[in-house]
Each structure stands twice: as C-alpha cells, then as structure tokens.
Image 1 (cartoon, each protein chain N blue to C red):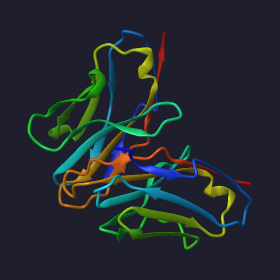
Image 2: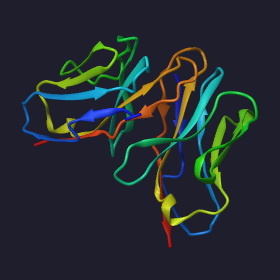
Image 3: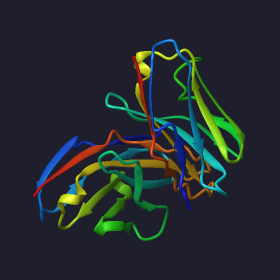
Image 4: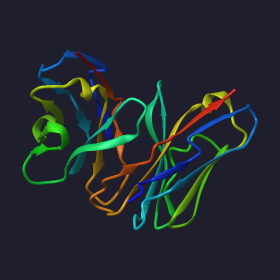
Amino acid sequence: AQSVSQHNHHVILSEAASLELGCNYSYGGTVNLFWYVQYPGQHLQLLLKYFSGDPLVKGIKGFEAEFIKSKFSFNLRKPSVQWSDTAEYFCAVSSNFGNEKLTFGTGTRLTIIP
Amino acid sequence: DAGVIQSPRHEVTEMGQEVTLRCKPISGHNSLFWYRQTMMRGLELLIYFNNNVPIDDSGMPEDRFSAKMPNASFSTLKIQPSEPRDSAVYFCASSSDRRQETQYFGPGTRLLVL
C-alpha cells in the first residue's frame, strides 16, 4: 500500500525566506506525485504534479518540486515566500498503474509572518 | 467552467438524523472522488467512481455511509444515522483522464453533527 509522510507539521517563516517542505512516499512501483495547497477557508488546488520526464517540476506561484527517486522524496521549494503563501500544503501520491486512488500526506501548515 | 459544485456548503444536524451531501463534477470528467478531512486524520479517500461505477469503497468508515452516482453529472454521499464523530469537511473531486489523475476539488461541505 502507498503511504506519504510529511514530517513538518507546522512551519513558520518570515516573508522573503526560502521554503522547503519535505515529502517522502512509500511505494514499490512507478508513481505520480502531486502537491496541493489549501488556502484558509478554501478548497484544495493543484500546485504542481510529476508524472514522468524532468524530475524538477515547476508549478504555479513560483513553487517547484524535485523528484528524487533514490530517496523516495518529492520536496516542495520556493526561493522567496510571501505572506499570501500562508496555507496548508499536501503532498499526494498515486500509482502509475492505472489505479486513480490518491493517497495524501497529513499536510504541513505554513505560516508566513509579514 | 464552474468547477466541481457541492451542496450544501454548511450543514448542522442532530445526532441520528440523515445527512445527504451532493456533488456535481466538472462536465466531461469520468472519475469522481469523495474525501473527508478532519484535524485528527487529515484527508481520507472514502470512495471513488469511474464512469458512474464504484471502484474502491474501502475508505467508507461503516455501513452508515453510502454513496451513489446515478449519472455522470451527479453523486450523493449519505450518512444515516449521523453521529458527532462524523463532523468533518467532506470534499468531492473529479478528474478526466484515468492515467494522469489530476483531481479538481470542490469547495467542500462542512458538516457538524450535534
């Protein structure tokens, strides 16, 4: 069975700081990887996704993530955060075998201090 | 595109009452997912449908929960009888392509069972 670990439960940063949120997954086969964001009071939105090809994936709002297969990781990064990035961030994984089921991590709450 | 539509947005009910949550997926999407989000358990997949057929309902907590998808544009999640521990935000999501699996989420229904 698939599982996703997000080790940072709550991260607090000042504006302009650099961000890296960890995500590790457990699955023996080929995977699809996702980062979703949930702004306060809103629904989940897709930030970026990886299916195949270049392991460095660029998403919306200046976010990027790097798939490192040997480490089973898909960490999310942003060089300079803004107050508007305050949100909860979810890493998710699905198998690339045709099963559509997404398994989410527990989420990381990001608070940006102006 | 209107996106995934859910109703009601908020529901307050008393223990023992029947609750019905509704979802209209994005037109043309052939997969529909029901998730539950709580502080304790994070985001959990309850059930998903492909072409109106339930594919995986292993996440449905117990027999009090049931879900239907009578046609491609409508799904319901029913809880009967409801209990206080069912209080959560219930999200519906849909996707269009079986292998690419980008899921688009609705705004959610915030359920409070007293």
